[in-house]
Image (cartoon, rainbow, N blue to C red; front, side, top):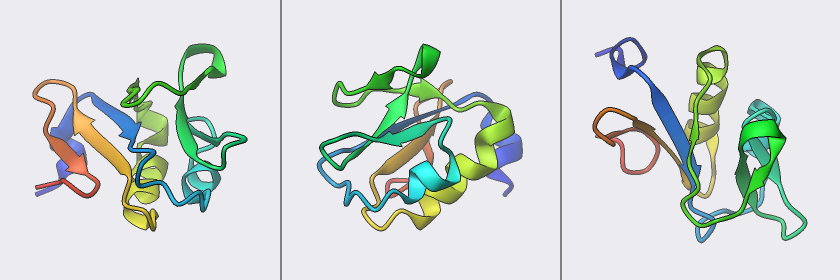
Length: 97
């Protein structure tokens, strides 16, 4: 199954409790992820604001989908969660079906 084709709108969040601070996500998709001074990765919201609230979620821009998916797949901490907006099912990340 091609999850990308069937996913519809997606959103992403990071579990900072599992983040190892390797920065792979920020290398793949700096428009979506950023390391803060605490050494952990966070998602970037509107206006490039760093969203530090636990479980903060942002939409995955379609042009950056492949980069966000690669981030989730390559993350050593397995802390990046990408889920469908329509039903909150995780399609990439540690809890993906």
